[in-house]
Amino acid sequence: MAEHAAAIARYTAAIQGVTTRLLERLRPLVLAELGLLPALEQLCAEWQESCPELSITFQVAEEAEASLLSLNETAALALYRGLQECLANVYRHAAGARAVEVRLFRSAEGLVLSIRDDGPGFAEGARFGHGLLGLAERLRAVGGRLVCGAETQAGAVIRLTVPCERSSSAPCPAVSS
Ligand SMILES: Nc1ncnc2c1ncn2[C@@H]1O[C@H](COP(=O)(O)OP(=O)(O)OP(=O)(O)O)[C@@H](O)[C@H]1O
Ligand SMILES: [Mg+2]
Image (tube, rainbow, N blue to C red):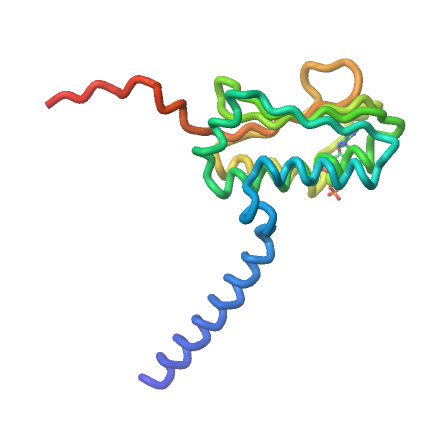
């Protein structure tokens, strides 16, 4: 009996080791080493280099920078993976697009990463594939959400929202003794 228990413990430790290594590979080094903002900038620069016909701009609102400090790792990873997916989607689905605007800003809901292109926009009846479904799932898991194609007549716009802490100057709730 004790032998079986020891064997189970060994297998469990081995599986945990594999899972940990797998997770390390899934989490991009650039995000861990540089942080979210430079990682997003780098993604835009890489896509710009491979797609010179597109003009990819990246703007960060001042108040968004402060919010980045309170962002947890999973939410940061969701935004990073989200930008990767959305830029790949522009390349694959936005034929004829000339410009992509990537913006990071605060809204009442949290931190928003918006990706807008001037291609043909979402086709009528377009359905989510694995890319946007997986992204929506990642965002939901951190209390955020994905909105596609809203507020625009031309092109496609995708908004990735993740919740974040209010600024530290926000009033504390009253404490009763
Ligand atoms: N920037 C865009 N412009 C126009 N249509 C888009 C754009 N991004 C996504 N779409 C539409 O939304 C659909 C769903 O995108 P999604 O990323 O989920 O799947 P996919 O790119 O087709 O496949 P994959 O699962 O490999 O990502 C696309 O098939 C396409 O029709
Ligand atoms: Mg896709």
